Structures are given as structure tokens and as C-alpha cells.
Image (cartoon, rainbow over all chains, first blue to last red; front, side, top):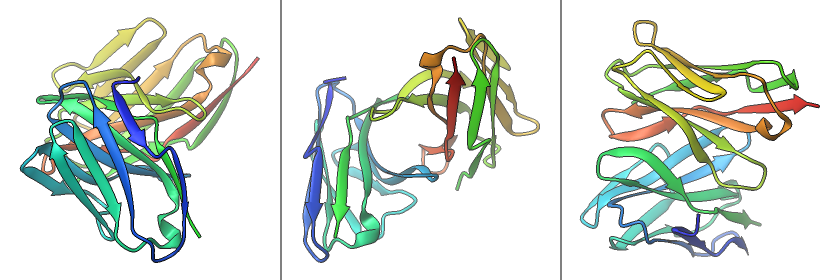
Length: 112
Length: 112
């Protein structure tokens, strides 16, 4: 689904480095989400945003920050990466009434 | 917040058999329950969802049932095919966060 894109798709970084993952969408949705996926743990919500001025912490926000630069863009930052942040990160969007979420292709992040 | 438990974590069936995946949730006010399918190396995609005003919903070979009293819902796949092999996630709406909480996933393997 090219309507939700993520960059980069793969990233290897070192402990202590700052890294930003970017998400863009052309679906015109107000709501955007960041999840991380780890084997056996499913999809866990990091941060979510209902509009540019409404940003909320999810289940596992410690060590992460976000920026909603525009309706179409939602970035996730790791201020000082650590190895246990190695995971697959997904961005998703949904319409104003919630409902179906549309996921991006994912970013595989490795912290060494 | 919402807690969603999903069982089993892995499921292997013969082609043509049925598969059932079960989830329980904790937020009694939750009213939206989607199921997502994630094929290997791909993003999760919605396959079916149900709202709390109905007890069952079908779409061809897949169906979802909801028991609000017991706070559990299930995914049923009939006449399984090899292309049904994937990881399946249930989710429930956390009414406090107004965001989805996902189960830990079920890896379904359909043996030809």
C-alpha cells in the first residue's frame, strides 16, 4: 500500500546515536501511530497522534519521542539508541472515526 | 488500559481443515475488534472486524464471533489453504487511549 511510506526501510546504528524514522501518508487521515514489533510480543503502541496538536503516549513510550510536522507526516526519534530498541517499527494511519488502520511497510532497526 | 491475550501462539492445520484463534480482552467498554493478517516480510492488513453491536460477522471463509459477556472473540477460518499461512493478530479498542491494543499473534501454518 504505497499510501503509507516509511524511511529508511533498514537501518543499523550504534548505541548512543540519535536516529529518526519518518512516516508519510497520502490517505488524508488525521490519525497516525507508531508501533514496534518484536517476536512473540505482537504490535506494541509507542506514540499516536489524532491531529497535529494532539500527541499521546502509548504503552512503551520511554526512550522515544515523536513529531507531527503536518497532517501527512509523523516522525519517531530515538534520542540515544540502545540495543533493546532493535525491532521492526511500523507506522499506521486511520480515519477520524478510528476503524481500519493502514500500515506502512516497516523499518527494520538494528542497534549494535 | 486494555489487555488482550491471544491463543494459541502457533497453530498447524492440514489444508482444508478449519482453524480457530481466540482472544480475550479486559476493557468492558471496548466496542471494536479487528483482526489483522501479516504475511512473511509484509505489513499487517485488516481481514475482518466486528463491532460490539453484533455477535458474528462472516466474509467468505473467515468469520469472527464476539461474546461481550465473557469478553472474548474468535477468528474462524474454514477450508484453509496454503495461502492462509501467516501471523494473525487480534486487537481491541482501548477506550481510555482511544487506540488499539494488539494481541501477541498466532502463527498459522497450513500444511498442503
